[in-house]
Image (cartoon, rainbow, N blue to C red; front, top):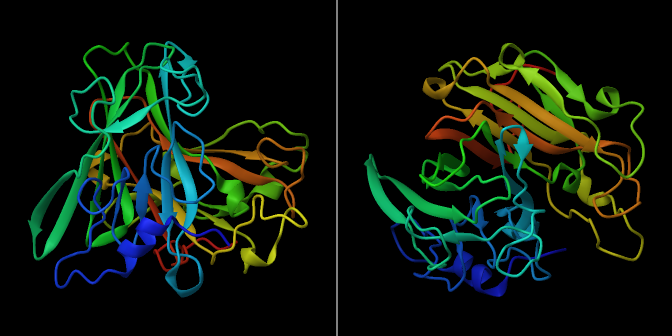
Length: 335
């Protein structure tokens, strides 16, 4: 099984006494990694959540799903701004600095336009009732379509399983149609169940004819089909249809694409006050694992997973990972 890097393992075992044991770049780790032990941790390159490294141009998200609370990588979040119909890809576009795939991400001042600082600890504030919130500004290299965007990523001690991502275009950006934040690696857990308001859409039924090594077409689910919490928040969830994904070894004699963790629910949430009429859930799928011809055991599974809406300054999306089931999150649909 993959394990998170040694420095972070050490941090997860520290007893700092009383206060929340935040992981903060530049404070108690020398890598661009942040989070709450026991909840989500996240990183931007060159911060690593597994020893063999991960693609660049992505936010890396880890969760304690392994034996005895060990961490594993759960998903990546890519940034994909659209300008005049032309979509940017933070993972795939070449960096202007070294002509290698993956736009550069960095932490530090929101106004920064280059990675002058990689180890910003972020801003920690008290929200009352003992709740703390850590906010980190993340800059992103300019995209080929002219988009120049920045993120604010926040995490709270009363919701340690969630990341709040706020998107803003920099003043020097081309006008944005959308700025899509997409969880890119549903195949890692072989996610086949998309949880909506009153139904669960299985990838095997959504894409019954899809074969080959390319992505299936995107499927769109408008606001009216999405679950609403009692407070009006929108929630859409993604799970595996396997009771124990760790039993499946996709490649014989190799841990390539092996997920050794417990079942989890991944979700996007949109607070009620931020919901707009054009909000929609979007997924696509794959029949083979990324960068391989190897079929996914059990058949086609969802890969990209997102909520999206037309861009407006300060738009926010919340990404979460939990061991709770969709029913335990308040969703009433059944598979």
